[in-house]
Length: 201
Image 1 (cartoon, rainbow, N blue to C red):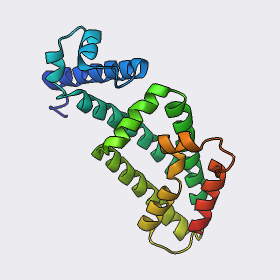
Image 2 (cartoon, rainbow, N blue to C red):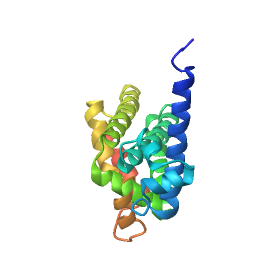
Image 3 (cartoon, rainbow, N blue to C red):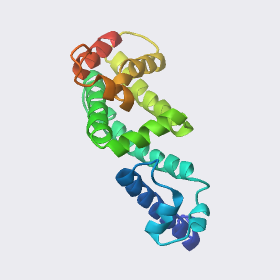
């Protein structure tokens, strides 16, 4: 039995942190990241700003934690798709389509979400770099399976995963998607995905 997890003090802290992040995310999405400050979050929760600072040193730190939580959900989606049944080609295809759809539907249709993600990308946080590394690891696993099954040519799976990720990054990067989506002189997400998949073969 995990004594630490059942410690009432730790549980209370986790609950408070969760409430702060939930409130901050709700306010960021409603008013925008730049227009929301720690005092607004404290007011929404009925607590003092000083109490917020007991858990987070700044609004930036709160934002970073929210992004980490969002990226965690994206990683879970990636695991479910890339570790599911099916050929390596089909799993990679479904993964890129899902990533692209998530970017278009969630990050572009909701302007405030887009702002939060853009700010995070501009700051080049380690949570984003860690997320990219974890996705590359998942893709490398699938590519290795594709090589073993004869779907893909013999190659370094790690290098191939990084290259495949780079080749399809314009389909998942909010700023790039916002600039390229629906423009007739740009490759569609289906065309670019198929091109990247052919490169693995």
